Amino acid sequence: MKYRNYLIFALLCLFCRGEMFAQEINFSKETFSNANMTLPYRKATIQGYGDKASLVVYLHGGSSKGNDNEIQMQEPGINAIATWLSDNNHKAIMLVPQCPTDKAWLGTTQDVLVALIKTYIDRGVADADKVYILGGSMGGTGTWGMLSNHSDMFAAAMPVAGNPTGQNAEEVAKVPILTVMGTADKIMKISNVEAFLTEMDAYNAEYEINVENGWTHEDVCKKSYTNERLAWIFKHIKDSATGINGITNDKSETIKIVWYSVSGQRLASEPTQRGVYVKKSFYSNGSTSSEKCYKN
Image (cartoon, one colour):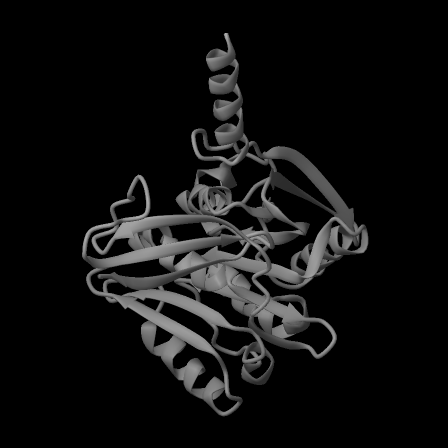
């Protein structure tokens, strides 16, 4: 009986730490009204470490416009982002608004979206220094536009297959950016993004551009949200006191360490054999870090 009780306790501990079961991610249906517009959106609350949750906003592409609060959820990037947050114990609130059929992510729609973000910050449920925006196609263009007009809101951004032409490079340069484009994309031109990034260079911008060979517009929108890219986005934290965005150095307490082979295979425990391995550390503030280690 004593052994059985101990086993049950051990299993519960593993469950609580997320080692055995991934948390189920549910997106509730919500609406937000402002400026004579009602914006449908979906919301997921993702459990993790840290005091306040990050606020993660995903902007969908043009084919997901409407008012059913359903079709925008078909985009693969949403699940990829939510899964990464959950797997990395990154406490977050994720919002997926739906753009009206006759609108885009600009003008009044952008104003309402900004008001929605501020609502979560003003209520104290989201960390103002950890607001992130991501999106593809029309959502990628909308992400560039949000940065141009509201750079002070975001810690980092990931515009995918979008067009930044005409945006304010000086403002956008205040936010760390990772953008992805495809050589076979017939809708969004790589040259437009490269030209804009060149403008940003004058303002000491922090950015990465990943150009995928052979990827079509659809490929970029579906495949861009890899673990490595998302880790790059979410390692950034904005300092509200200074207005400077950067990588956090305050990792707080180490709560878990996971070891991998250099090929990416997760190991059951810390390796003892000689060789090169990857050590991934999880911290109590929700951040993670990875480093290569050599075992003698």
